[in-house]
Length: 66
Image: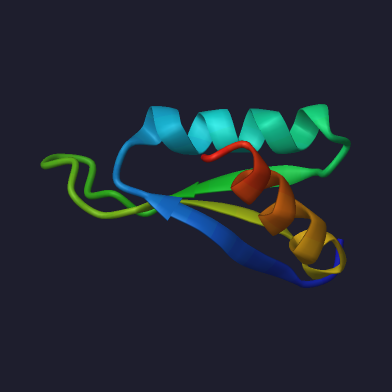
């Protein structure tokens, strides 16, 4: 895996999980980076994909209103 970039960010874990699963269902490998504080649950949960799939991933996110 080469360069991974953030394509989605949200403060709610379940929304980022949905985005990740939609991308995986469309054959785009995605990972979640949870940057929330473990005690207080503030911060962002990011979805990252390989930069070669970023444009397609962003298009899928927009088409599905995620």
